[in-house]
Length: 306
Image (cartoon, rainbow, N blue to C red; front, side, top):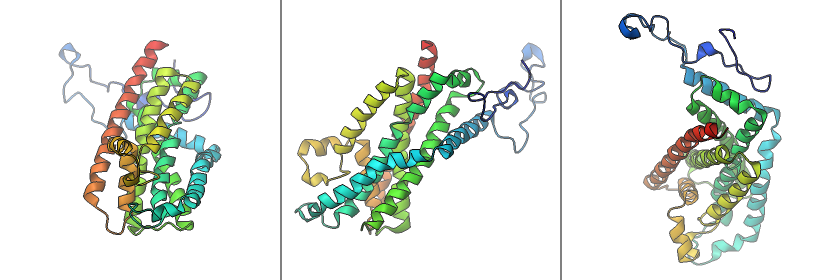
């Protein structure tokens, strides 16, 4: 074993040197009881990233390289939402004329909902990458390396966030092309993309957590479909809650998908209620913290099961 043992992915990819991980600095064991002293400890050199940050950057770059090699993945996840946007926009065009809908164009109402739905669907498959790494033995190598589990989670969630930004921008552009308007301007669109990132990262945390617990593709596929579709339809993503049965409106109040869809839709209005947008964003941020923590702790369960 050499001092600079490296970790690679299936024989290629970025190396994670041991020297970049949490080794004790020279002099740390000097003094009584190996406690060392402030004088004996080396301070981190200026400009050098922490081991956790190094691992996060390397792993995020790994996932982005995989996307670069297979960019078709982006368009595959966009196919169904684009069809829904085009078909629903045409089929339910007259819905906007129903008393109580609130007026305006249905395509304008629908586009933020499709942005959120796209983020949800794409993020629900994030755990597949973990399952592939488990089957290829890469995950075990990651877990035996001196890298923080939080860095593994953060890298995957960062990758999903960047992917969601691209997907959301494409959906917004398509919606604008077929007649949607965004009176809130660039700030409103940025807020819409931001909440789509939050809901995507929260869902990615759930997907990663479930993948680590089950380690099975079929289980993740079933859970993804079972969770995402009901959450989407039990929200105001496609239809104003003024027009749905009362029990659906009650459920939607506690539905993170509805928080995201409502926040995004309000943000692109001519006079956004930013206080409401901020409240929904806060709830979504809390959901991100909870799911990311659960995904990180699930590594312990996975390690005990192998």
